[in-house]
Image (cartoon, rainbow, N blue to C red; front, top):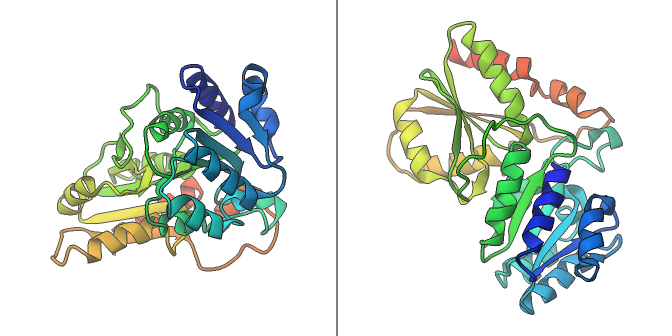
Amino acid sequence: MRTAVSDEITELAGSDPRIVVLVGDTSHNVFDRFKEIYPSRFFNCGIAESNMISVAAGLAMNGFRPFIYSFSTFDIGRPFEQLRIDLAFQNLPVVIIGLGGGLAYSHFGPTHSICEDIAITRVLPNMTVICPCDQVETRAAIRASLQNEGPTYIRIGREKEPIIHTKVPEFIIGSGIPLEEGTDICILGTGTILHNIIEAAHILRKSDLKCQVISLHTIKPLDTRLLENIFSMFPLVITVEEHSLIGGLGSAVAEWLVDQHRPLKAQLVRIGIPDEFLYHSANQKTAREIYELSSKGIADTIQMLSQR
């Protein structure tokens, strides 16, 4: 996903001189090609993420289109005041790319995991929140974000995540993408955990449970038309996310559901990370297993829910 980000921004920069890149002194080698071609449009702001947000805001106010790139832990976890006042309050077109959201950096310990970033950004007025599931959606999200006239947070993974899309899908901010067809249960997923969700759906199909799987890549704004349809069609809708159960995808869908003020067919169940820190180090695979977010863990949970 990191390469997808740098390749897409470098390609877009060729036809859009407004594009500039800001990094927080981490992973800036990812942008070696961008720096080589556009050295005057690249800024290493150092380990000073709050200041980096303010610099990006200033550039945006002067007609530039800044892309900020750093770990989610740092470019979202540290500078809340600058995100709120400098970007969201002024509705400036700055794209914040958060590397390694969720449990991606859990091997570095609890200081580098961040399962609250979606909640932090989603609560801010004017902020768009996107969690692509693979490299293909990442490149599409970068392109779409350039057309967005307000601040955008894009949460990506850190490894060579499996490619889910075999061809470039139609990507519209605020519009989900169906990945698997099914008639028994609908699973809404967001971000890199979708690979595990699809594997879980394949496991469940062997026990004759047919799950529809949808990439709800945009958490804000939500695809309310899609929610209307699936909550009218399926008896059970399940959200799955690598984020706290508080404030993430499941919360967003639950809030929409409560605000309907009318009975709908489907029951909503949320799968995610409980209200706790992971206090020890573990790689992402192990951390997902701890929270039953492995393919088997997700399949087992859904199997149990379907038998209630």
